[in-house]
Length: 238
Image 1 (cartoon, rainbow, N blue to C red):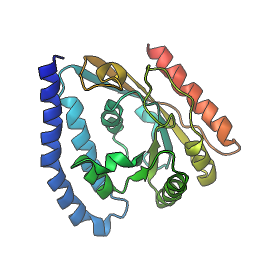
Image 2 (cartoon, rainbow, N blue to C red):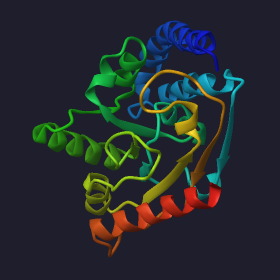
Image 3 (cartoon, rainbow, N blue to C red):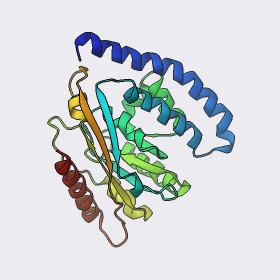
Image 4 (cartoon, one colour):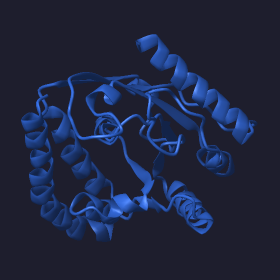
């Protein structure tokens, strides 16, 4: 996409956010008293995020493996992280979950404010107290029946290669006794690399993989299996 096209796309993202956020506030205000998990607001947010992929003519999104996701189960969902676009396409699995995201994202106008309304989980990188608070909040959310979505690499890959996983997601799954649901994301690095805002043509693929039960597995073993599953899925799709 040309520089003008990329600028127009990001202008579209901003305008849509400015329009959708007041609606999100109304949805939150009306549903919050009877919807502690904020499922309705998350569904609205899912639609909001999906608009950003539907509206881009250079992106084709394909979701595979949705049958591995059971709406009556609670998961720690883990996905590889290639691009900001990962956030848009992961909403396309149409499932209820709470993001764990760096605290800076919660300060973004409209989008960040909506993250707070949804009760997503902030994390300040490199701050041990913040990590402890994040894990405590995630435990509470899991007990209440909300899945958690995390990027266990910790940050976006600079090269597109899968990086080692940090242990937090897998320790959380073992402590809570819930399965890990690996999700392989591909194509988003080409759509928008880590540095810059130039949009490129891409086939975006999200593959929901079979859940890995945490029972009788150590966090390290759970992490190894999830890493191997995501790596294998993305190699097969290359």
